[in-house]
Length: 238
Ligand code: NDP
Image (cartoon, rainbow, N blue to C red; front, top):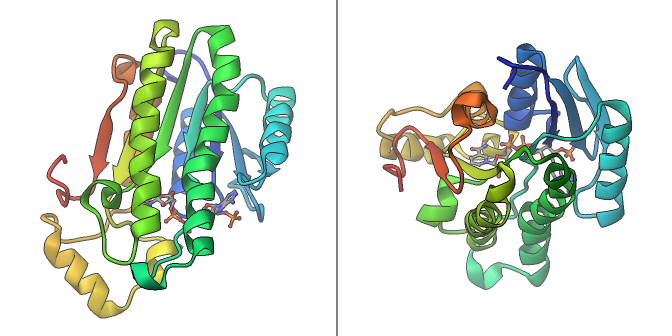
């Protein structure tokens, strides 16, 4: 991407963890980056926009702000996500709908709004941050896994709908990454996970960011509808 010219990149959930590493990687390339979160705290060099992605009006307002401040969004990274883990018989309607509303419906809302400008400009990159769990399943994560698997169908449908306008839609599926989301796991759980990962370690958030910036780059222009695993071999390419 920035091998040619800076583009406007919107990263949701970019104040910490994977989203922050993604935002920092685009900033380092010289792109114009906007970060949206509920609580603020974007990295230096990014436009900090408050936006709860479960609120359609807030998503519309965020895009309006980014377009006014930086220009039309050419790269969308739908990264914001939550968990509400528990075994299925204990999983409440609220646990289900909060997770699906944020991870899947929120991403739909963002992609729909971003596609509007991308179609007009006949270029764009949409990247969803899913998870190895969306394809492998995980006990206690029926809601989360369903939301993350849903992103694959959504990306592939968008790839078909938008491809004729040079807009790509892809999924990055990280394995276990060192962030606040995984900090809640016990040492025993972490050790058990590492044993299953061929590379025997968690990912650094920057390693996920590398796949995202590549998909958004000129080198990734002919990749669409793909699921790129960044999981130390856990899913064996799915
Ligand atoms: P964190 O919990 O560290 O960060 C989550 C981010 O999402 C925060 O920036 C948070 O900001 C934002 N967010 C959450 N809910 C909303 C909302 N309703 N509206 C706007 N922003 C929101 O997560 P990670 O960095 O670990 O994960 C990032 C993504 O990667 C997620 O989609 C996650 O599912 C996925 N992933 C993570 C893995 C891991 O091992 N960590 C593995 C595989 C996938 P704020 O609270 O300020 O709104």
